[in-house]
Image (tube, rainbow, N blue to C red; front, side, top):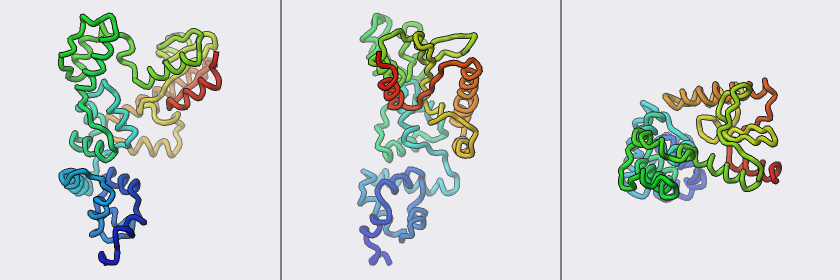
Length: 286
């Protein structure tokens, strides 16, 4: 059967993108072959034909993980979620493993599948801190040779760090985009205890407009409505990741939305930088 079933036959049934998705979900070669009605013997050759792994070590690690996952399926994350963690300089590897429930070697494996560079969290934090201090008035308060190891050291310097150090990079980009299109006054972290007792990401006094930038994964990809699909998304998560999603996406954001509605506020939420820029371009040019 294998002789008749060529690599070309297999490629016609299973594209590289589909195979990457199956491997990222730690489905074994046997499971994948059965799903696509192919002989399992062709799977190793198919994987190598797509150059999915660069070394035998990676390939063997995948086989080990997929075998383990048949009996104890680990909670996996999408490429977008993993990118969010990797780009957040406040997270160390330990933080990411605690939130996702995945081992560090599993995370690194997924980085290779998703073609994400698994940069050291400590080095990323150090690089960002050094860059910020080199452009600030606080150069004397920072030793660029000091090794950063997670949150403790960041908190030690927090009093001397410019306010935007703790901002999500995408939120900072959103602020710069807004300034590009809107020349009137902009307030960041606006606080109005009577009408909206939270720090609102952006507030435009001239328009009395509250803007929340829900770019982080804990906000979900859209407003929570309690629909079957939303419940399914929530139930698919595990551990601290699931707890954070409930605290922010389900409880926190819903409460903010209802408060804005109660006080009849001019209130907008954005879940992607592209949508935010489109809105600014079409509605806020001044």
